[in-house]
View 1 (cartoon, rainbow, N blue to C red):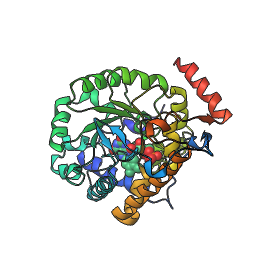
View 2 (view 1 turned 135 degrees about the vertical axis):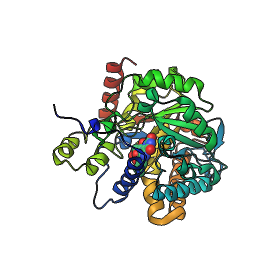
View 3 (view 1 turned 180 degrees about the vertical axis):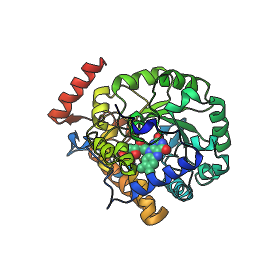
View 4 (view 1 turned 45 degrees about the vertical axis):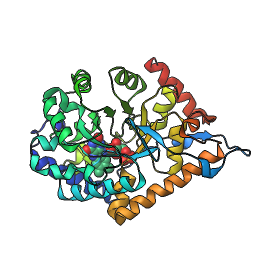
Length: 367
Ligand SMILES: Cc1cc2nc3c(=O)[nH]c(=O)nc-3n(C[C@H](O)[C@H](O)[C@H](O)COP(=O)(O)O)c2cc1C
């Protein structure tokens, strides 16, 4: 077998920040690069319309509890960037959008700060969003070989309210210099959670976390698990656009339909499992509503917000969030849900294919 791209040299700080900048370029140039594949299958979820909703739009409350506090809307801006000049500007804009909307905001991996501490300013989002939860980010695959104390120290310096540990084996395997050994990640993650000064969220990056793994991670102490399923940004695709090797790029294409769609993970898990967040392919207010109705406690979006702020600045990001809010409020009213908790319990039905697949997935994973 020839070497996978990941088997080349380990990245150094400059390469890391160049890579983050390239990721942004690829994700933002929708005319040249098609980074989204598959479907979240959230369009196969249907809340039941009520002709007699017995609900007043002005009384609908969209707040949710989030990492020990309360936020105004049930969605957040997912982990993205930092560690380059463009990354700084984007992070600042995303944080300002979050502050204005009253929603949580994540940041990209802070791993670069272990090698290039001088770019810490790129990640100091609390300056721009002091009123909302801000969470840091680190790769799970790095945890077996990293001093956890170094990461905790950075988290304290950034004054974050939580940290998301991302699991991204598919991306790593197609990333030049990426990791190829995934032994020991669960055990290291559990150790990281146990000593962390702030809540730890575990997320994928768009391939999904299967229902058995979600349960296992919650059992091991995760404050929340973000299923980050398939149907949105496909990181194998993003990496394939960066490869100068056409053969490997073609092989990456075979993974266009890899991963577990966001709605499928949620449906297989069931509404009773708490501290589950949903992201991956969330592209509308109705996607947010449907994910909540399937039992998600919070819903995350990455690509839509970064594209909005890079096209139209903070105003465009806020406008996008307001459009989602409008749809959420109307759908809540039409289902007689005065609170998000009531929306999570509202009657809903699934397309037969999604229902059948969810049953099969739950059965095969023994959940
Ligand atoms: C430009 C960009 C950079 C990203 N960087 C990170 C990262 O550093 N850490 C991480 O956990 N996820 C990262 N992600 C993945 C997102 O958090 C998210 O899981 C994924 O894109 C799927 O959501 P989406 O379909 O809404 O884009 C990034 C996404 C984008 C678009």
